[in-house]
Image 1: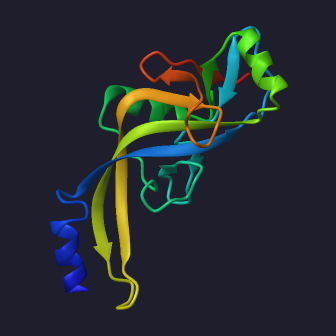
Image 2 (image 1 turned 90 degrees about the vertical axis):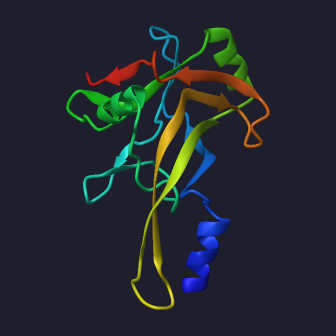
Length: 170
């Protein structure tokens, strides 16, 4: 284990961090909202864990603990974790013509890409053969790019977390 730890400090997560993209799929669970002019999507973090820290929908080792460091990241976390006032949805603005074109393509899944910084948190020795590695992450950009394909080649829009519309509970 000491050799692995030594290697990790040298090459992997050289300074304890790694810049990456968090890519997630999103099912279109609602109809096009003509009043808001777009689709409501669940974008991380949107699901509480048992320990009351909020996690993204996917349960990946690197993206388990969202710890924002920016004003827009903190605002986003606060909105997504306020179940009394907000649904865990943000608006992907899109004109009706573009929405209709996607509907005609039978697109029911969108993909989001967010630039993040992953930070090595700690190595816990559960047992000698399988240590538990923990990471946190935060957003490096307020822009969430939205694509219609998993290859992330057909961009259909973006959401700016500094100017985002959160869905209020009715």
